Amino acid sequence: MPSEPVSDPRDAELRALIAAGEIDRATEETLRTYGPELIGWLCAILPSTGDAHEAFSRMSEDLWKSLRRFDGRCSLRTWCYMLARHATARVRGNAGRQREVLVSQIPSIVHAVTQIWNTTRRNAKQVHDVYAEIRALLDEDDQTLLALRVDRDLAWRDIAQVLLGEAASEDELGRKAAALRKQFERVKDQLRTLAAQRLPD
Image (cartoon, rainbow, N blue to C red; front, side, top):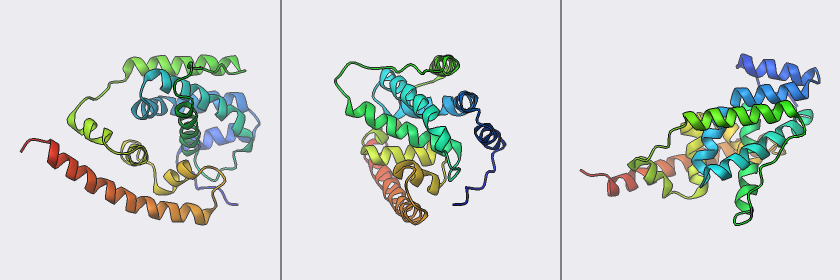
């Protein structure tokens, strides 16, 4: 199956590392490139920074394990968001048990993940405004859609890939992307209604 056209030079560089079999380095460089924005997204959709840290750790480990089967059907950025979404589902599914932060088998990845996490957390700002409160009233799927489309500016096909996973066919991705556009319009209408109810005249 043909791979997705690559317009990001960084994506092309990372793919070259994978093609050369440099999986450890490709993992570390991918985390350095996309880690900060992934941490920001995880902090926005999970209830605590501890949960976000665990999800990022799991995503990082999954990234290292998965790059040998990465087939280029989506960008590496999209691949990371797909893995991060799977990691959040596992973290949510383990709610109430003792938090587990995984340690990668590759020391350089451990160092990269820890450094990225600490730097990003120091620089991150939690926005506690009315709009954020309104968004919190939406259900989990709608919040995820808003975060990926508005906050991260992912294309519809990429969002479909994140939500459906790596096994989705092109037809499935196309149908899901069309459905997401309709869902997005509904979510915008819902936000307008909530804003009208909560914002002062």
